[in-house]
View 1 (tube, rainbow, N blue to C red):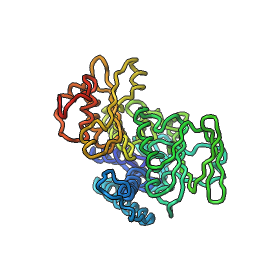
View 2 (tube, rainbow, N blue to C red; view 1 turned 45 degrees about the vertical axis):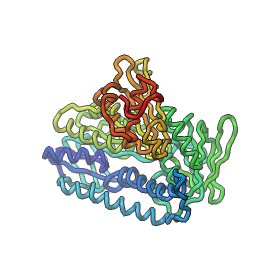
View 3 (cartoon, rainbow, N blue to C red; view 1 turned 180 degrees about the vertical axis):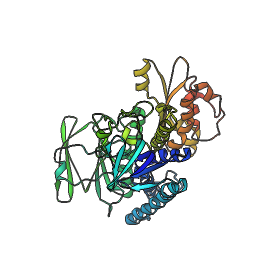
View 4 (cartoon, rainbow, N blue to C red; view 1 turned 90 degrees about the vertical axis):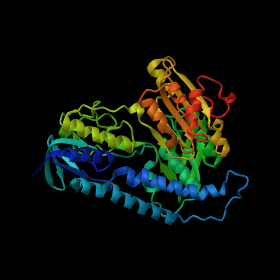
Length: 467
């Protein structure tokens, strides 16, 4: 029986963050990986492959819809869908090898492929062998959540995982769920040429986003021909030959939607049910997510958890940071925590959505007071100059101190623009700090300075670069 100082269960970003930290500290550790190939969701069925296919869709779609009058649309381009999937597979394989397999080898991290299951608080069984550990980190990730719609067992459906590897391009697709995953895949396939209909239960797309941001993104997606319905109550699913059928209630009336593919993008479920957590003394909540304190320690004092299985923020960046911090707390006793309010989030539609900090609703719930301003991207000189005026930016501040509490953007390259706002939220900068900072002109990033200025002046009566 092998004995380790630390056993990491899970080979995604959270597990790797923990294992690398353990290697840096020189402790005897092992990483056990099961389910998805090494690298977990992000590199295999998440960030990497979806962003490549989104970019392929854009390269195909945008030349057919130029925004300048001086350019004639190019409608001669063709799309080889099978080649696109093949190109995706190549990139995924290469990044998995360079960013995970070789990294593990470089740090001297032993990797065991197989399912790890606790058989006692200090021992796990893997491939019929028993491993003993002083401390453990559970980073087993998540999987797509399938809601128990009536008829779900009688209809063939796909999730984002299967949508990345379809053998042919469907003529039509129904996407259930208008969160980040649902919208990214909706636009991806719409730009490939599929007729896409999106159904969302909540009253707006991106239910956690600022309403101004969600409304603007919906307007942009609908302009591209994507049909979007919010406030939908799905009643039943069934199949008619090759077509999938969704019957739902919408505003008191019944609607029926048909499509060649049915993509369910209804959230995630934790991979916590086959790990033997009960035998280890680790508690989970009613949804199955592992309960942890602020230091990512579970109810078992020698076990920590990180990543999607914790259920705090479903991002690779957060999983990696949680894994690193969990290992530091477990092995060094550092008692580190994470400020989730300063973690940026992004949706890679076009235009993109990015946010950091609190929304107006969240700030009001905490403090009962908030000041907010929204600026249209068309008010940014660079946007007007390049005729890219889709979008808006909203900022929430403390009205007493003028400290920036949250920034929310829908705009081209919003995921890149957000980082100035991340620093503002993280280091509690004020709108005066932003206004006093000279920005390059003309740039899209001036939007952050403009929205800060909008708290103190009428920006419609400003010349360029005015302080």
